[in-house]
Length: 370
Image (cartoon, rainbow, N blue to C red):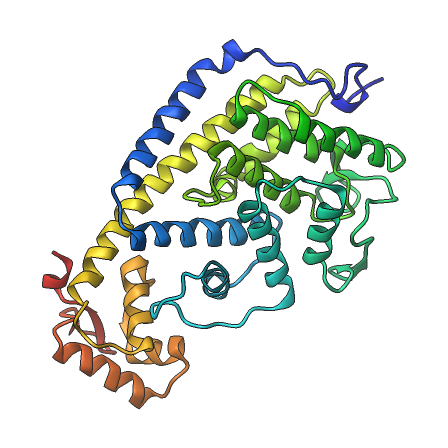
C-alpha cells in the first residue's frame, strides 16, 4: 500500500489550486509592501541593523530547529565582518569551524541568489556543515548524496514513531536531477509559492545523511531572495519556523502522505512568511529607536566595551546590569568595568538603579530613552 507522496504515479508533478491561496497571498503582499514602504524612508544604519539581525537569526535559528545551539553574539560578529557591517557596538568574537560553515552556506544562498543551484553547490554546502565528516559521533557521507535509506523517526528506542520514509537511495540522484532542473527552468505564477514548493520538494527527497533541514531552509531563503530580487534580507523564515516548530513539522508530514494536500502546506508556508514579515516590522521599530538613541551619543566618546554593553541594553538585556556582568561580558577586570561604568554615569548615559539590593545595578538614564 502506498503511503507517501513520492510513491504516487504523478510525483513530482505537484498540483495545487491557486484560488485557494488567493486571500493568503493578498495578505502576504500587503504586509510585504507595508514593510518595504517603511524601509524606503530609513537610513543606512537602521537598514544595516535589520539586515544583520535577519541574517544572524537565520543562521542561529535554522540550527536550533535541528537541536544545534550556536552562540548568537559570535554569529552576529562574523556576519557583520562578512557583510562589511562592522561597528564599535559589535564585539569581535571568534567562531568555530561548524559555525563558520553554517554562515558560509547562509551567505552564499542570499548574497549569490542569482547563481544556479547545482549539485556541486549543494555538495559544497553540505561539506561546510560537516567539516569533520561526522554528525555527532557518527561518520556520514559528506559532500555527496546518501547511500542508505532515510526515515524520519521520533520517540524512545522500542517505541519509535515513523513520520516519513524518503525515496530509496538509488532514486536520489535522478530525483535531485529533476528537482534542480525544475528550480532553474520552471516559472511558477508566483515566486513565493515556488519558494514554498521548493522547500517541500527538497525535504521530501531528503538527499543527504544529515543536514537536510538546514540545507532545505537555505534553498528556500535563496528562492525568497530571488522572489525579492535582492540580497538584502529583512526577515528570517527560519526564525518563524522555530517559533512554530511543531506546526512546521506537522504540516510537512501531512503533505508528504500519499493523499497529502500541498495547498495546505502552501497556505501554512505563505502564512508563516507573512508572520515573519510582521516580526520584522516590530524589529524595525526597535531599530529606529536604537538609531535615535545612538544619535544622541554621536559626540560622546565611548570605547568598544561601552558600546557593546549599551547595544545589549537597548536590544533587551536579561536581568540587571552589574559590574560583575559587565566584566564577564567584556572579559575585563572588575576595576576596568567599574571605570567604564563610572565614565558613562559622569556623561549622563547610565545611572544607578533605584531598586537597590545586595548588588548595585545600572540602567540607561531616563532622559536618554525619550
